Amino acid sequence: MRVEKVGIIGAGLMGSGIAQVAAYHGLDVTLVDVDQAHVDRAIAAIRARLEREAERGRISAEAAEAASHRLRGSADITDLTSVARAEAVIEAVVEDLEVKTRIFRQLGRVCRPDALLASNTSSLPLSDLAAASGRPERVIGLHFFNPPWALKLVEVVSTASTTEETLQDALQLCRQLDRVTVQVKDTPGFIANRLLVPFIFDAIELLQTGVASAEDIDLACRVGLNHAMGPLATADLIGLDTLKAIAESMFEEYGEPRFKAPTLLRRLVSLGYLGRKTGRGFFRYT
Ligand SMILES: NC(=O)c1ccc[n+]([C@@H]2O[C@H](COP(=O)([O-])OP(=O)(O)OC[C@H]3O[C@@H](n4cnc5c(N)ncnc54)[C@H](O)[C@@H]3O)[C@@H](O)[C@H]2O)c1
Image (cartoon, rainbow, N blue to C red; front, side, top):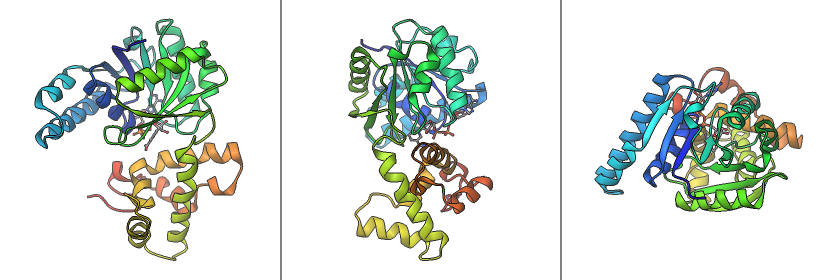
């Protein structure tokens, strides 16, 4: 199935990034969030990023303008009728099972019968969302990476109820979006976060026990391990609230201490220091 219209639920870091990628690759995008002002801000930010990309010569000015015209927003988060005609919907709201379950229940009610229903969840049980939708055979995980316009990987996550046709439709959508895919079963953290989260938590332990400064921990990983970004800067980029939520569901599922959110991470979240998106996390961004 070739997708022409895509609905994206959630206009935060990931939803707006995925919307940008989809619009750039020629899809008509409807971006939905809880209120209109939030959606309008997200669309303005996407347009500004596209313009910047064009100014830097990474994309043509025509492509940036065409992509901008393919974006529209809606705040109908409760009934979701704005995405009823989309061939594919990608959900990217907060990492909260209750919120996502509500959305999948509603998507099952309003979407066209053949719509592909995807979640960008990092760690929550996709099978629960599939069941809530009432059409579990059409539900799949499409786990994009942050920021989606720069990182091409998508983990394509199947549940026991995902059909081969759904998997093929999802892979075709990823090809339309020029993504690199890996296939994985419905398990918390999939491949990348299962490896990354304990690594970040060890870095936080080093910091909170005073072994080294945040700057030196990240410098060691960048220069010594040849990582593009240090673990603490990566945590700030993910968003510390999102990282904590991901860890909580991984810890609940695996029960292993390596997935337990360190005290310092929980304290920073309580203070509202959520990383780049609030201007302060392990580092300051203002
Ligand atoms: N941040 C990352 O690096 C990253 C990477 C891959 C996947 N993800 C996943 O993507 C999803 C979104 O993460 P994000 O980083 O974009 O978070 P975010 O906090 O930037 O955005 C979340 C969005 O959800 C909306 N929202 C909040 N409450 C809602 C509700 N009750 N109903 C509907 N929408 C609501 C918010 O308004 C916000 O726009 C999560 O499932 C996360 O695990 C995140």
